[in-house]
Image (tube, rainbow, N blue to C red):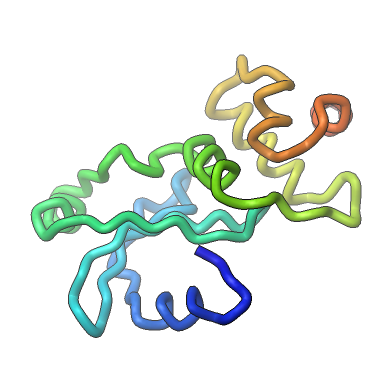
Length: 141
């Protein structure tokens, strides 16, 4: 989602958050449209791409989330969310070269997958390899 005409804000204003898995999956939640009752799995990527990713889910899937805390695999990792956002959007341009959102995202990626390569981090964040390498070196200090 995301446009300059406000369609995303109008849509999200109709979606009520019902539940979320909480930490460490802070980026996703189950929502339901107040107008049509459609359930939505929502991933909010606010650090790099500033986008909402949406997936329609049916009543059975929503019930599994609400009653058994059984979440679908879609949007399960922040890396998945970044990969999808990267395929659909342009990353933000950061005025601060060592921006906290870049550092935090790299820390999360490396926590979840310690063997992630510099090139993979760079691709996910839309950065040059050298820039990603400098960010990672900053974290190691």
